[in-house]
Length: 397
Ligand code: ATP
Ligand code: MG
Image (tube, rainbow, N blue to C red; front, top):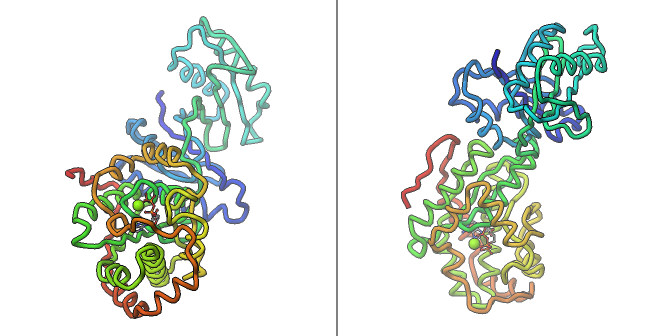
């Protein structure tokens, strides 16, 4: 006997009624992609949970991969046995003996998904509990706060015995909420915003503004590495790199210094929106957090947002920097984000940007720029890279 299965419990999708089938399919596809380097695994998706047959694959690396897949509430190692009382008793005992159980308390939580099974839930709890007690020493029952909660689930196809749930990433399977464009800088915030957007089931494509020679190839590589890291949570990500130098310089020449940042942001949002249209995205995601810097006051957001009616999602809007950093560290983007290469916006940041910009003024200043043409030209020169999961990060820099 051995742990031969991983049981996957779905997150919120269980409440999604009719869409459930689509959710399960999407989750299965995402899991299959995530586990493609484990050839022996077999995934079986049911309405209310999923089973992965290990076929002798060591479980720990598989569990670690699964913990990065959105849509999973929890997972645990399981033992599968025939739905026969004696077999279940033996398997339960074997299962408990895998733990250092001396001096511990336990409880059996049986569930009879197969109502044809001749033993009721209460009888099962009793039968299995006494069998375990009879065949072990130093183990006692505690039904309220057990150290080991052994779950026994009797189903038609077999009985699964599990304990110790490992938390999953939660959220919804990536792809079930549609597609959005993530404005991805090389900073700490936007990768976290992308992660949280994917957590709610959004598929993302990333858009990065790049201003050579003011920003280096290494700054670009940093963004590629960030997007690559995000693929571990969301599957393939297309990264659109926008050559922004000419447009940015034109803005700085034409618009007074204290308004240039707002104008630059407006141009960035317009370009992102154009790329979104081409790629059939529904929304734009940014890493903005209210009041964090001059361009993130509500007045600035209003002035920037004025160029589009496309929803701009800001998952970090109410978070403090320390909270954002904690997530960045946990998801493995922080060490990439802190590489010291300049972003296009940092280089051109004015000394005293307007924190309460006036819309009429912006429109007046921008009138003197051939913005429509410049934006169309810029969009035509966008370079797109496709990044796939399971590829090594370029950690050379
Ligand atoms: P981040 O840590 O994400 O860079 P930040 O705190 O530095 O954020 P800003 O520089 O004001 O804040 O950027 C706000 C948001 O605008 C970013 O989170 C990102 O979504 C977008 N953004 C900024 N610079 C770029 C860029 N070069 N390319 C794409 N998006 C960008
Ligand atoms: Mg930044």
